[in-house]
Image (cartoon, one colour):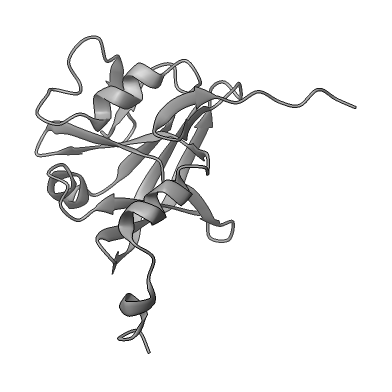
Length: 170
């Protein structure tokens, strides 16, 4: 049945345009591989399960960061706050030292870099991976969770970073 689906699929540009109207949260996934910190921005982060506590994100299979990040024995999910658009953009760029100043970070309890001033950190152990289309689905078992500031999240919408504004109470 999946052999006939590509003939029926919407064009990539049309699909991208439709997805742009959906806002998503922004995280930076970090790890340490051979003593070197690595990280990337993800807007595909999601909770998967409460029992066991699982989260997921997708990474493009052509990512140059993924081979090092994927080889790590654990990773951190840094949930970004609304004022961290510059940090998200920095970790989305190629060919730069993402951990150099002005990035502020410290090693976490298991060694993965933890970015400063984020809303929360999740320390995850690899749980499952699957190739899905042109991306890799990564599922992590949450071993530690630390909420620092439950304030406003950073969002990604129509190709830009933005902030959440709650509706006034009725």
